[in-house]
Image 1 (cartoon, rainbow, N blue to C red):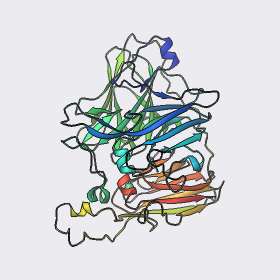
Image 2: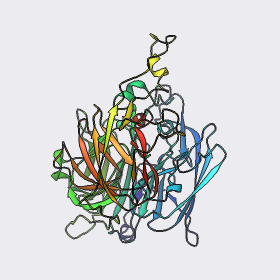
Image 3: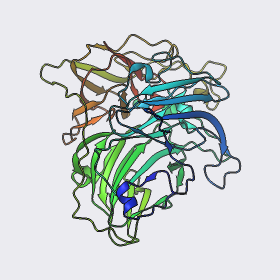
Image 4: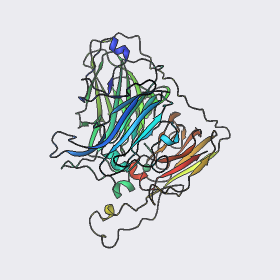
Length: 485
Ligand code: C2O
Ligand code: CU
């Protein structure tokens, strides 16, 4: 069967193009269309599976419907019913629809928007996605481990108004903390939480391992127009996306359209994706059958290969390429004039409790004692020190319908991908990168010493999570709430 991530548009099907891809057999999770609302069941359960063939023992993964990075497709503005079944043996879970501007009760944050879903129980999410674009979903409970074991999926929201392309390819990047014996973890370490996060040992795209120059290979119609949807679903890794072999344009950030921007106009011709961030690229494939376009991550000593796109003939005859402008975004424009500026300072917490005397001096004593520690704060507040069920006072109270500017001030030595639930925001400016293009986002990277201004209309009532998406930072203090009402 075809690769589910390689979704051919009608135009490509009519042109008779055939897609072959990375070898995943499962079908995409396309909602079963009822009268009005597609219904889908997402069952979270443990699955034993090898991530690489030579593992001595399988890894204990936790997946939705037994699939690594399943792809769910919904229609913009159409009500959907998505039933989460918790088939996990031992812990509660929820689903957060990352980047979707949906009602508070559907946002999937335990204790804040819904009770956690206990093993054997279920919860039905009902919403009509207001924006077309590239999104994803993941648990908001024990996120560092549940996401680390594979619980995540891609959510594509389609809109018939979007320009036709010859191929629409989803690439979901994730690292696995795979040990030589096949076990996974540790998911939270003191070193990682206090530093940049813990990097996995196995890199993957769509669940397919990356090893040096060995990367998944996707056949794309030669001479055809490609929409590439890249998702960084890792909890730590930064990716600097760089394309070799074709001119590529950035056409959406975190699902939201922007006027097509050539990658070549950016510093190092690369666009940086932090954890949870997405980028849609448009490019025209070379016409020579067999020609290769490479997607690479510029970080590291040499750019790592993420995927190879191979032109598969016969070449399509297309008029000269114009990068397609996507419709939207359908977002309220913040009024900057007179908008209050709300400071948000991201800091390291100076005091740390030392390991208890009984453990002091043991190797890894620090890691063993991490749980109660707090390493990070936003405006001096920390959470989940007293547990996820006990949030501190909101960091700010925003009046519904008003425009605000948040000034994100990173006073720490680490970079932080800062995410706000329930809203998209406009990234206005950076104190360290004067060339940063204005763009919409739900997650934005703030570097050490950087002040970054973002603007939004606070139009979605509720208490909304505001946190770092390096989950080890989130779990050690860097999360809070913004109240809109
Ligand atoms: Cu994807 Cu609260 O996050
Ligand atoms: Cu962080």
